[in-house]
Image (cartoon, rainbow, N blue to C red; front, side, top):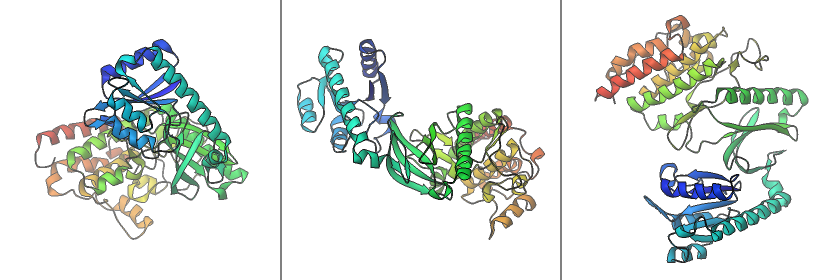
Length: 419
């Protein structure tokens, strides 16, 4: 049994979890705090759960309001409303609004409560089986030309030259996910093998790093001759969105520190990202961030290299001089890219712009490091270090970069003018 518990009261959550574990030790309870995590995404149907337990009230919200939304979603999992008493006005309203059942606080842990959950599990199990085997379910599990069992396709959210990115819902993960699926025109055996090796490398890299500021990957495989990779979905978007709204110095440095710590873990695992840019820094709804897209990463721990020797990979605006000229790189190249991001967060401008990519690459190597606005004058030595032309003149590693950024952040906290 797998349940989603929506409740903000830690004491109530502990009681429910304890009584459920005493009844069914193998039961899994996923807790969501509505106050901290916000509303459920409108596309979410909780298909990976046997039931959803919904609290009556929390600070700033009411379960009845959520219930109206959830029961209006066709195919949503059974909702068990947790009222003050099993037959009070809230309980009756909840049932009238489509709740599978209403259970009072004093009934949690008794026979009625467990019977409700057993019946809800049976109902959801049957609904899933009918959905999977019906035409609607089969169509919903198709991502372009690829049939991927256990995932409901919601929409395509991006198209690339090699793969498409879809928003889907995973039964196994019990959440919305992003699926990267190889494009139709890359279905011959050579391209399939190459794409799958890229996805496999990305999967192995992320599984090895296991850092909170690195994307979570859930699954990968091949279906209908399409390689696919399942990853965390970021409803809040990427760092570009936050930068367009404008960032002050302190939030910018908190972001830079989080990125640098992720790089520290990556580099310690022998991984150089090679395409660090704002579009690959994703934002979670809790305010944390995660680096994505390790398909072009250099991984010294793996035997094979899926990139082609002599080709330049990356995004010109964020490339280190050595990367832009196809020279050997190490973790200091990622630190240069981080320096570009910091400069852009503070100024809302890229350090080097030109009419074409090769001209930008030239400027990274030949033009002096640009100056920050006067109000950030004290931070210029830090930018000079990150954007040094020679790797030897930058921070030796991400650990040094983290220490320097944290020192600068402490200074910012004491300064009113640049916060």
